[in-house]
Length: 140
Image (cartoon, rainbow, N blue to C red; front, side):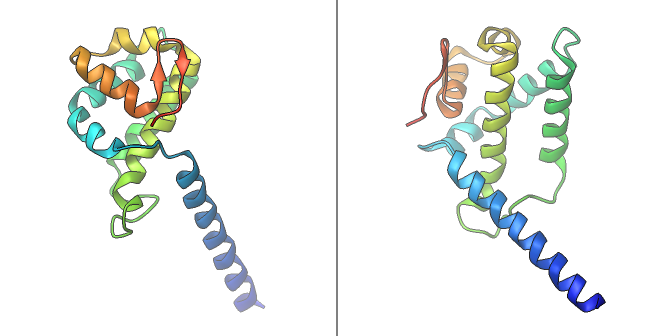
């Protein structure tokens, strides 16, 4: 009986993980997002910190950004790094998904106000995340 329960639990965990990998494949931005993200990484980290510590932002946004920063610092990834392509890209995909959610809640102008990097860096961030001044566009 315990053996069957453990097998069932293992299958359920595997199915859930496969569903998450499938979801990441579906929502991943097109283009060379990983290279763009690495180029602006220091400014992106400052942006996340600035938004997460700004008390004028909604609590849900600050919690979401805090959880993102915890996920990025924990050495255990959703998809292990030895998995080709997605192993290293999962962090970038999750950052893009959270940024899109944050922009929906606070607006692109608030994100721009907290950006400490260059204009080119902000444009690269918008391109990588599929963001525009008017809202969202599909990243190429």
